[in-house]
Length: 321
Ligand SMILES: [Zn+2]
Image (cartoon, rainbow, N blue to C red; front, side):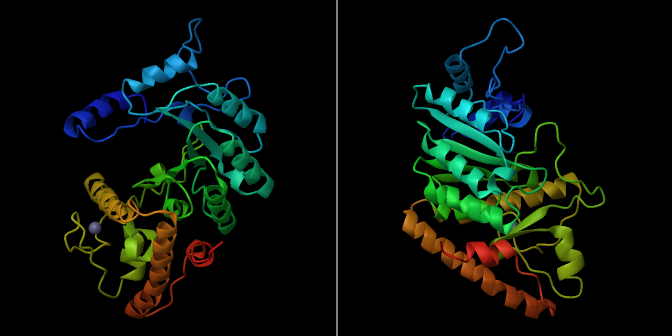
């Protein structure tokens, strides 16, 4: 991501020669798609402009896959969405993902979700699907249901990109892969020009993945609220090595430890899915969701009061559809 991405990609490649490295085009975070300009292309301001194909060849010098430089698609802007599809479908290459970064509002209305699914299913290329929102694109039950519906009804391979734990629900319902962020900004696309969710300067402590609960909770919240009067949960991942899960504060080195805990935790959860077929993934997800629901009463009896179970966990992920 970002203008320095090729430089970082080279460093990562040098350190991990066998690791595939894919660079996200700047367009996804900086360009609004329109019917005339669904893609952001180098040299757009000058007289000389590369063809889209040449642009993608250029991308491939740094990236193991090409991704269409699609701009963000506003809610209801079917014209821009269809223009992007039309242009992407003209490309004849096997190394391409068609990026669809759409406003989360496309999940809020059934006819928009249906339209989005129709566009995905007309793509000649696998789709990289991501939603833009200042906070949490898939934060309500109706959006979580619509999100699942997309993967269930897609007949073209779809990658759930910049997702939170909803990426596992996607995997269980047909996504070919999920890219799940280790911190909030990587779990969504912020609308072009926006600054993202409100930042509480007082509290920059990391959000910590709690695998058993399928939940991500801020360290400070656990420390002040859950474990103020009782022993905290301990984490035995390779980063925490038995230390308390609520120990981290907002300074940069501590935030980094928290994000590394998330990388390790997400990776070990994700790795369970790799070799499973779709029914296997669905069964595993159902067991994990049931396990997460079972964890609540245990935690409640430990801290001595009820906790609110996440609606999406209880009423969307726990239901089969
Ligand atoms: Zn840990």
